[in-house]
Length: 123
Image 1 (cartoon, rainbow, N blue to C red):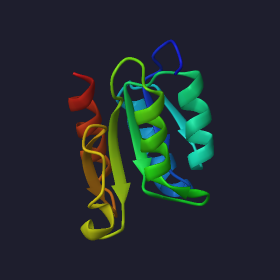
Image 2 (image 1 turned 135 degrees about the horizontal axis):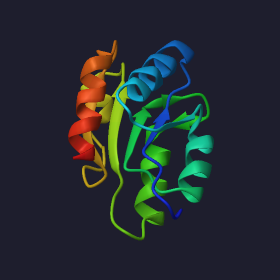
Image 3 (image 1 turned 90 degrees about the vertical axis):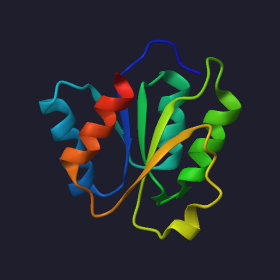
């Protein structure tokens, strides 16, 4: 797992949603990195330690479960704070690893609520 803490990792392949989330976080003074795919997220998580991971559950090269599984197996200092973002129904998420996933945000997202959740997890 990576060393220094880098703020928030936003994992979402939708450019408009990802852009809106990142812009709102930056306006709120939160550093945000982005990943477009599960493999991008895993690569960044291997390089850095994040305070919070905002994770789209449905990604072009897999799903959020791959990222959560990677976190579970690679974590040396305890779980990251992961918030899943999805348009899937709750049945598709019933096998979430609750040790690593702190909550679920359903799409379409309320970007003010997203940043409020991030702020709560950062405090």
